[in-house]
Length: 191
Image 1: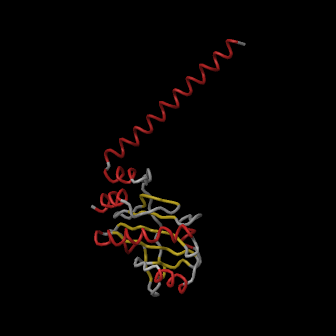
Image 2: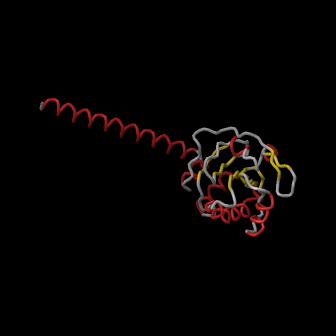
Image 3: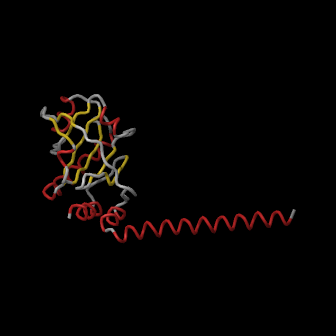
């Protein structure tokens, strides 16, 4: 009985050591990758780690509040902040002012914000955008097709698309986008 207990203790100690070694190894690899990539490092420092692998976004075309059509493909070469939201969503409303501040700060450097409204009609979205003095474009996904294509299960959900047209970040939930750490990350991405 005593021998079995010793074996179990040794096995737990051994497995714990192996797990700790693996975790340290993975952490070291992530730190090495960030250390070599100033953009990844800046986003990690802002609490927004980039995807481990870039993903090609699905192109779409949706109506703007003015009745024109905007496609994602037309923005290639610019950094695109793609946000899925609704006017009834409290967290969405909370983060919008910080998105506006980010847009005003970086639009001349190549940042585009596209706020895809999920499931609402033009008059409601227009009234919200005007009453909150939001100047970035809002697109209407009234039937939810584009939201479905992007696998949106919770709003707000935001994606960051680099100048090559690849998704590098996915963030579910609202945050304050107007912080010094996020400014530094955006500077690194836009330069």
